[in-house]
Image (cartoon, rainbow, N blue to C red; front, side):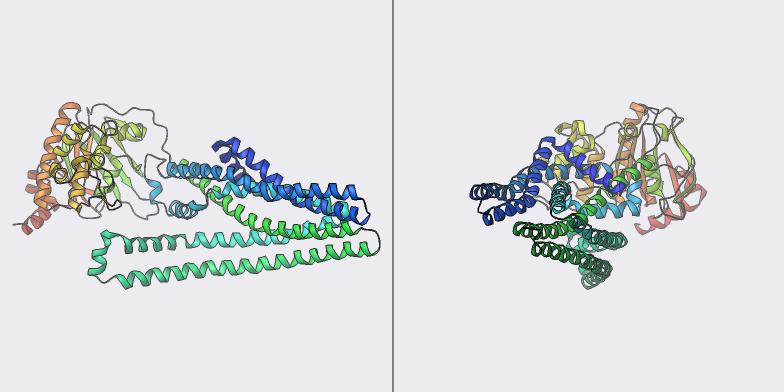
Length: 594
C-alpha cells in the first residue's frame, strides 16, 4: 500500500510540475462537483420535512439551495474537464519524454538486449494511449474520497449504525485489487508472445518483407502463427479475467446485503416514529449514492492500480538504467592518438547468453592505420565493433586508448570522436541532405560539407538522381517521398558516416553489404585513402568489418576472427604466405569471382 500511495503521489507530482495552476483549478472544481451529490440528499430532506410541516419559507429556501446545488452538480465537473484535459496531455508528454530518455539513457545499448527491459517497454508502449488518463483518475479519486467522507457524516447523523455501510464496500475493493493483480501477472506472462505477435503483424504490412513472403508462400504461415499467438494470449488473459469477474461478483453481493439492510433499518425507525419522511428520503438517496460511489471506487481502484503499475514500471526502468550506467568517467577523450587502441585479454558475453561472443582477444590498432576485421558470420566481428564504440563494457580484460582504460574515458566525448556506419543503418525519412547531415549535427545544414561527405562516400550520384537533389523528401511515409533501393540507402548512410572529416576512429561495419564484392573492394580502397588524411591530422584509425576476405587486401592489418577469438593477424601478404585460415578462405571466396 505504501508503494501504491508513492506511485499515486508521483502522478500528482508530475501533474504539478506540468501545470500547478491547472491542477489546482481542476481539483477545486471536481471537489465542488463531488460534494454536491450528498448535499442534494440533505436539501431534499429539508424540502420534504418543511413541506409536510407547512413551513413555506423554509421549503422555498431549501428549493432554491437545491437548485443551485443541482446546477453545481451538473456543471462543476464539466468545467473541470476543460482544465484537466490539457493537464492530462501535458502529463502524457512528460511521461513519454521520460520513456524516450530511458530508452536512450545510457551510453551503451545493453538495455536493448534485456528481455525484462523489452517486456516492460512493450507494456508501456501499449499503455501510451492512456498515460494522460492517470491524472484524471487521481483527481477523480480525491474528489470521490471527499464525497464519501461527507456521505458518511450524513449517514452518521441519521443513524450511527449506517456508518458500517461503507464497510460493505471493502470486499468489492479487495476483490477488484485481487482481480487486477491476476490480470497484471497474465499480461507480464504474455508480454513476450505479444512482442512476437506485433513483429509478425509488422512483417505482414512492411513493404521490405512483402517480396520474400510471397516468394516463399509465407502468407498463411504468418497468419496461422499470429492467430495461434493471439489465441494463447487471449486464453491466458481470459482465464485471469474470468477469475477476476467471479471475485468482483462476490464482492458486490456483500455490498448488496449491506445496502438492503441500511434501507430497511431507516424505514423501520420511520414507522416507529423516530425518523421523519425526509430522513427516509435522505437515507435512500445516500444509499443509492453509496452504491454509485462504490461502483466508481471499484472502477477507479482498477484504474489507479493500472496507472500506479505504469509508474512502477517506469520506476523499475529508472532503476535498471541506473544499474547499467557505467562508472563515472574521469578522463577526457584524446584529441590525437599517440599509441593506439589495445585489446588486452578482452572477453564479452551478451546479457542472458551462456557463452562468450568474444574470448581473450588481444589486439593492437596502431595510430594512423587501417585495420580490417574479417571472419564468418557469428565470428564476433560486430561485437568487437560495438566494444570499440563503448556500447558495451567488456566482461573481462580491458580496452585502452593511448594507455587509458576506455571505461574511464567520458563516453559522450569518445562517441564524438567516432564516425561509423553499420550494416543495419537507419533509414531516416527526411530530406536527402538532412539524412546525410545528421552525421555531424553542428554542420547538418552545411550544404558544402554534405556534398564533400557524399563525394568521399562515392554517393554523389544518388543525390544527383533525385528530383529535388538534397531537398528531396525520402521515404514512403510521405505521399511525395522518393523511395530508394537498398544500395542507395546504404550509400547515403555511408555519406552520413563521412560527415566527420577527421575522426579518431572511422568504423565501417559491413558498410557495403548491399554491393557486390568488386564494388565493396573499390569502396574500401577509397575509404583507406580517406583514412590517410585523418591519420595525418590526428593519428586516427580506420576499422573495416567484413565477412568478405577478398575485399580488404589494402588494409595495413587484417585480423581474422573465428568463434569469438583472434586466430590470425597480419598484412594480406603475410597471411597469404602463412597459408592459414585467411589464405584458405580468401582463395575459396576469390575463386567464385574468377
